[in-house]
Image 1 (cartoon, rainbow, N blue to C red):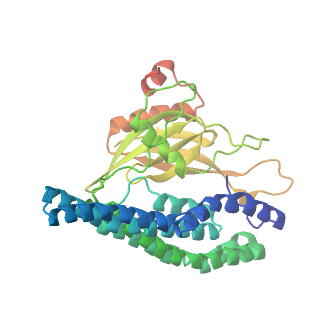
Image 2: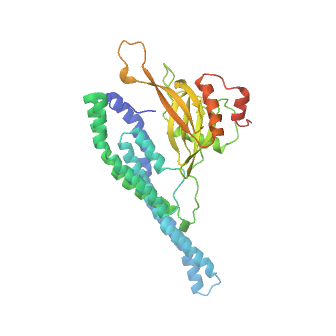
Image 3: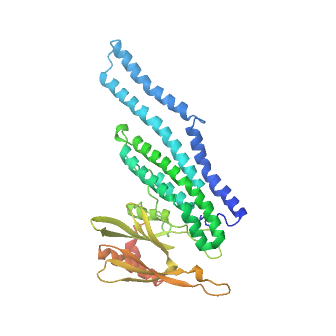
Length: 378
């Protein structure tokens, strides 16, 4: 859930601190303690190393006594020992650095940063090799150094938006930004060691950390796994939580409806983008790397158009202007924003435009069109 009112009042702050940060951080504390030999981290490491050392000693002793053991088997056991001597201490260091980095990120009290940081540290595709890992780590370190600017920007923005109270809140949030560079240093160490763990020397192939999310359809029937749908559905992890229904408390249920692939060529680079349509919103973003460009609630769509030379869909949306709200005014001021869905293939843009036009006009999607957009159900 969103954490927009951290410091609105003391009771709200303490309640959220206990329910969100303490409970969420507890598993990371256990991981850190386990890595520091509280529940067998170092003994397990030593046991694995001794076990790996026993086989070369046995084969070497047998060869020295004139046994029939193969020299190739001895070389293989020595290679396995060398791999474990590198892999096991690196794994211990990785677990300690990852847990420490996650705990420090929770201490920043910034939900958006916590989510972004977690997506970076626990990215689905792991780095292969020290160079690959170090390059990702340097990028995260630079991001942490840039985040130090929040010491000045957060009090300034808070004062502009909410006056003295916003300035005080910004001071607290800005002071916590000093944690960003140390987190970046830990991320550099984490990614470098992770690249070493998954290096070709250790015989580990590139793999995905986890399977992409299963797209949940509104009919709630079991459907075959569709990689394209799941990849588009993963964009929801970057979106804001579903807003509760008017007068309700919990978030509304959200289901997959359709995804429209969009190819966009930016100079010599070809980007794979997608327009994701759910039962609550329209999401536009990039797939490689996963990046959210914008999201629009369905009830906020005003008009859709696609004009020559068919290079982008124009989407007009209603946006509430909170600064113009006045007490006693029985109306909510709104303004219209123009958004662009850029693409290089007119056929893809036309297909997406037809669907968005139905949503903007609050019309039901025809059965024939829905059947084309939906995968086969079983």
